[in-house]
Length: 566
Image 1 (cartoon, helix red, strand yellow):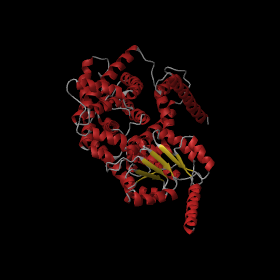
Image 2 (spheres, rainbow, N blue to C red):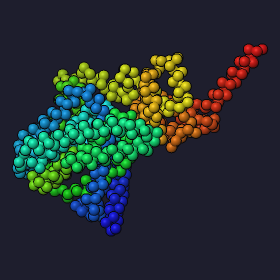
Image 3 (cartoon, rainbow, N blue to C red):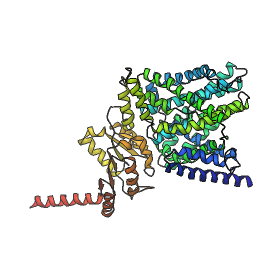
């Protein structure tokens, strides 16, 4: 019982310190991640008050955050979109890692630093500096709403390849002293089997299960989390990392229409565990000496240089744009949490020295904080590089950048027909159904601009065949709609009154929609004229009152009949 109380106390202290320090960071206009890390450092025994006594448990709990993050990343990865990038994405994913490892391995000895002298130190440094932080990058890009831009897609694509490279290296690690090709091929084969298994079960079992429980958003969420941890467990039993399992689990159900809804509900839970991840990182921070800080600065400088020369030129050469090349390189300018896992395993195999592990940990933390500023101002920095290259005749005019950027920024609601889906109808109930029939007869061209968001997939085929785009949505959690273009919508229409809405009401919807669709005209539905006036006063462009419309129709019909009789 004492152990459980200690764990609860450690979690409580971690949240309290992380929250207080992040508020201070916010007031000072610094990244919140800095507050989390400093909060952890203050709790630890190395630099703080030694208040947290159960570091291993905090780290274990924080791993859940990493698993949920990778699951969400998997849900965000549209394999069809990556496949469209085809050769470009595969070329970038392969060259970034291999060129980076080769460059660091070849150049690092010339730095004359006091690390890297052991047998495998140099290899571990090269691998560690070639991997970027999935956790930091995706969180910051999601906060900036840049995950679906072309540079965002390239960034996530590189991260996916980096995760695969990391898993492959972890499979080779135990055999570095005596590498056997058979064991390496076995690890690769297991990954392939896991992917094949996950996608097969997803297609033939989960698809039917989701359809059966589509009317219950809670079951959709629970089923998705169950699938995530099931595949994580299978991956762990097969000798792979649980994080790899989470990534594959997300990718295998990303094509389902419920992905955006699951993401919106998991983000809050993920953020709680991710906070503990950074606190756990802060707990490990050693009391830095001038030597360690100097070595870390040299390593971070090398890492930044390597990102620029192994990513930007490749993207420019692939005709994806100068700015996209530098944006992608800047987005990936940090050291991965996977690097820390790889180094910890390397220390267990006695491949590296404790000094190297301490230096890379310090470098990772400093680079994590620095990266938040780099991503915050990535467009300004990229524009500077772009102007410099323009002076030597290298411009951003490429054959497909403009087209793809347009699709990336405005394509959340795209339908593959070049039309922008900027009108979103929330709910497919009585009014929406009548509206659809009316459009079919009088304005078929308008159909190409409309997304209908509803929780019932039974209408998907019917609406798709008519030319509409259907999207899964739980209106009680409208944040999920941001993934289908709510931010870029010109008009958002809720055709359901409070009498039929579950878990929310039009007043709450208006508040949320005003934030998520700042440029949109918002049209709502109400049963009461008094409530309608309040909604208009609060910012709604128009409020439909079915009873009033029916009364007006009856009055006009009866009046017209009386006039005709006279």
